[in-house]
Length: 212
Length: 90
Image (spheres, rainbow over the protein chains, first blue to last red):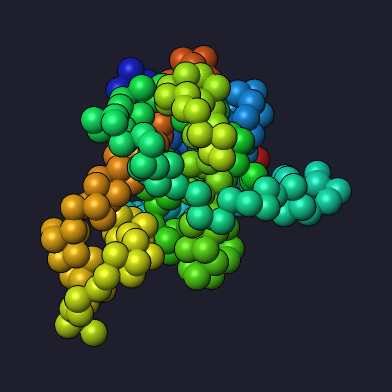
C-alpha cells in the first residue's frame, strides 16, 4: 500500500492528476474527524458503529468529491454525507417508522420556566446554578434520549452549529420542517435534561407535587 | 423588510430560538434585539438558552483513537490512489 512520506506527501507517480485533491481531501477530513466521530457517536450511540459510519461517509465523500462545488462549504457537505449514510442505514433496518415512539407531552417544555416557578425564586440565580452543575455526560445522555428524527436536527444545529439550510440539505426536508423539528427537539431535550438533573441531584428537590 | 416593529414578550419568545441560531434577519432580528435590551425577563431567558446552546456546542469534538485515525488515513490513501491505473495495467 502506498504510504505518505514524512511530510505527508504521496508519490506523484501514482497520482499524476489527483495529488493535490487527495492531499486537500485528507487534510480536510482529518480536520473534522473529531467532529464526525462525535456526531456519529451521538447518532448511533455506539463507538464501533460510529467509527464504521464515519469510514463509510469518508469513502462516499471521496467518490462524490465532484459534488462539492465550493470547498469552503466542506463542513456542511461532509456532515450531509454522514447524516445521509446514517439515515439510509436506519431506513433499511427499521421495520416501523421512527415517529411512532415520540413522547406526546413535550411541545414546549422549558427548563428556564421550570426554574422560575414562584416557589423556587429563593434561589439566587437558579438557571446559572443549574447550568454550572451540568456535566458533559448529562448532556450526552439527554441528547441520546431524544428520538432519532429530532435528535438529528438538534445535534446538527446545537452541537455542530450547522445552518438551517445545511440541516435541510442533510436531512432532506424543507427549512420550515427543520425549524419545527428543532423546536420540538429542544423541548424534548430540555425535558430529558430536566428529568435527568432531578435524578442526578443537579436541581433542587422541591415539595410541589404538581411539578415532577 | 428591514424596518423593526416593537414586539411583546410573547412574540420575542416565539422568535428567540431562531434569533439565537443566527437565522433571523432584517426587521425581526432588530425587533428581538431591541426587546431583549429592554426586557429583563426575556433577556434572562435568552441568556439561559444561549448558554445551554453553548454547552451543547462543547460536545462537538470527541477524542479520536490514534489507531482509528490511522485507519482513516489508510482508507483515504487507498481511495485516492486506486482510480489511477499503472501503465502496465492498460
